[in-house]
Image 1 (cartoon, rainbow, N blue to C red):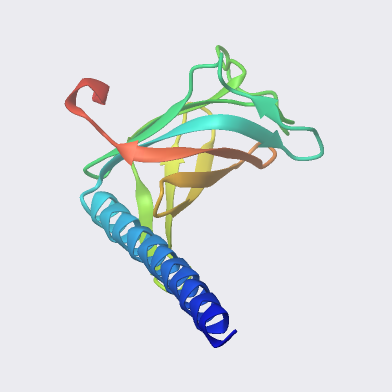
Image 2: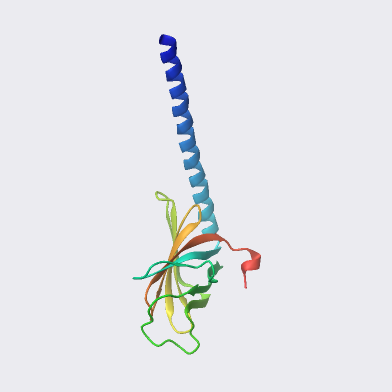
Length: 171
C-alpha cells in the first residue's frame, strides 16, 4: 500500500512540475515577443493590416476582401482604411469611402506598458479634407486594435495585426 501511495505522489509531482515548466515557458515566450515588438516599434518601421472594422453603433465588418493598411516609416505615415461611419460635413470632391492620409506625422508618441505587455502608438495625420488622430495598441504577439478619429467624421476602430515593414511594402 505504501508503494502505491509513493508512486501516486511521484506521478502527481511530475505532472505538477511539467505544468509549472509549461507555464514558465509560456511566460518567457510572451516576454520575448513583447521585447521584439517594442524593438520593432522603436525602429520606426512597421505596418498595421486590418482584419475587422468596428464602426460605432454597427456590427463588425470583415476586411479580408478590402485593401487596407497603415504604414509607418521614419516619421511618415501612409494609410488607406475603409470607412463605415458618419461624416459630419460634405467632404471634399473625390473623397471616397475611405480614410486616406500620406505625409509627416504630428504628435507621434509611443507608450510601453511593461506590466500588461502592450505598446500604444499615437499620432495625427493630415488627409485631403480632414485631420485624423490615430491610436494603435498592440500586444507582443502583434495582434492590435487601432482607433481613428477624424476631425469631420465619426470614430472607427479596427482589429488586425502589426508587423515589420519590408522593403517591398514601401511606396
